[in-house]
Amino acid sequence: MGFRKDFVWGAAAASYQIEGAAFEDGKGLSVWDMMCRKEGAIWQKDDGFTACDHVHRYAEDVGIMKQIGLHAYRLSISWPRVMPAGTGAVNAKGLDFYQRLIDALLEAGVQPWVTLFHWDFPYDLYGRGGWLNPDSPKWFEDYTHVVAAALGDRVKHWMTLNEPQCFIGLGHKEGRHAPGDKLGFREVLRAGHHALLAHGRAVQAIRQHVPDSQIGYAPVGMVHYPAEDTPACADACRRSMFRVTANSCWNNTWWMDPVFLGGYPEQGLETFGDAAPAFTDEEMKTIHQPVDFFGVNVYSGQPMKVGPGGEAVPASHGIGPDLTAFRWNVTPECLYWGPKLFQERYGNPVVITENGLSSMDWVALDGKVHDPMRIDFLRRYLLQLERAADDGVDIRGYFQWSILDNFEWAEGYKERFGLVYVDYNTQERILKDSAHWYAEVIQSNGERLHRD
Image (cartoon, rainbow, N blue to C red):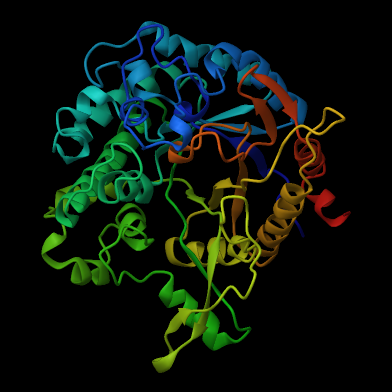
């Protein structure tokens, strides 16, 4: 069977990780601009102030996307580039950049899929309490109105928030990402509740301006898969993947159930107890807006085995497991079991909004970048995604992370995730072997996966 004929093959990036121009043309500061100035926060004191200089080099980058043959490009909008203070005045020069980028993509035959928030929260609004402020959902709604009104005549595919588990959990609980806070868990969940409300209000705003829009959301997919090929192990995984059993942001249902099912999971409310946020039925209705696809970012998974009482418990990855340069486990099975189990629970068509790896990439003596491990990784994962499609999972698209090597948050420029190598000293772009291979995968609608 293979991938559907209208399957969307894409690649992704995020504003702060590639754009640069952090202090140009009226852009306001973001919490990541703040984080990059914090002593010891970023590897080798790297920062995103220039990054891939995409603001000035977007035409070249769009040309590369066209060369690869991408159907779609998932980009994010920098909130403080469009609204420097986060609310109020709109920065015409900042909005104009996205107008030009969208036009260039469409001219190249590349469909823009826009994410409204990929972590670059306006610094001025952080000074007013950030996501802890009960006005934050309204701030985000106002920003969404501006962007949807400006771009909605050309942009039909939208995502609201990227990975709330990260910007809330890593940013507000663990302090490893911007804004670098280590709040109590009650405050963490309060910030998360406001972010979910912001999602719902943004969906309403997009619908108002773009009635023919396709809207989704891009949380982290925490995937469990059976280590034992038995029905009992598969059933135990179904339960374990949707459990909330610790005071942690690293779960699925706390961030997905309100959006897709209309309520926080009972197990989460019991586990979090008094730390859980107060909410009203009206707020849940706001969060639970109809959406068109289940976007999810999947990189790795956890094998599970049947433990005492029939419940799933973590299984070992084995001695000397396969690891990426980021030391993430290589687990292709997660791109079969993740989409399968998410669709079983939530029902929406699935789009893999991020998947990829950091690899040990450098320019070889022949001037090229040979990344055979990325090709092997992507082939293994995409074959599992195809297996899910063959088993009846409604999978609509796949976005490789990332189109370019880029600023990897607290890891600075240590990790290279791109299909395209970026020399940050000269800003030269070099298509890696994987970019040429992915072009063949796209051209063949996945048939190339079976020819290696």
